[in-house]
Image (cartoon, rainbow, N blue to C red; front, side, top):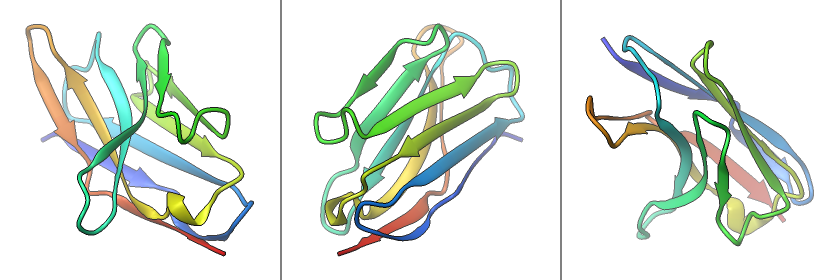
Length: 118
C-alpha cells in the first residue's frame, strides 16, 4: 500500500522558518519528480517547488530565494526548508510523487497545515 506522509507544519510568526518533510513508501519509486503544492480555501492548488530524481529544482516566483527543496532518493524522502515566511504562505501544503513515463504513477499526501501570523 502506497503511503505519502507529510510532517513539519505548524504555526510560525512572519519572518520565521519551518521545515516540511515528506516520506513515501509502498512502491518502487524511481525516475520521478517530487513536489510541494499548496492550497488555500477557494483557490486552486498551486505548485510551490519541485525536484527531479536527478536533482533539478524548480520554484514558484513567490518563494524563489526563500524556500529550498531537497530529496534523498534511496530513503524516499523529500524536504522543503521555508525561510522568511509571510502571512501569504499560509496554506495546506501537499507532497506529490509523480512519474510521467511508464510505469506511470501519481501519488499525493494528505497535506499539512502551515500558518504564518503577522
